Image 1: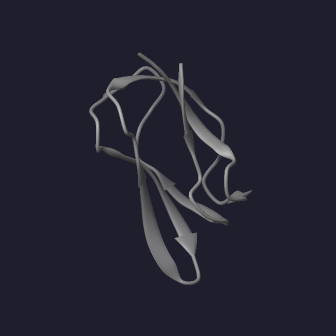
Image 2: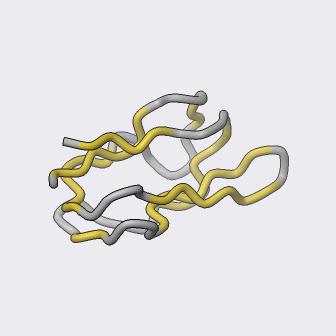
Length: 71
């Protein structure tokens, strides 16, 4: 199991994957909005999206788990 965490505090602007989807290393999975900038959050490894732990529009703190991947 691999967790994708927020690299900074901000609002979840867009979730670009769905549960059950296969993702490749380096693929963007969530776009955060912080300080009026869009920050793409990508995965470091290939896997299947097991659970999306946030909703679009929600606020997250640095280190919060956004998505879990199953290898």
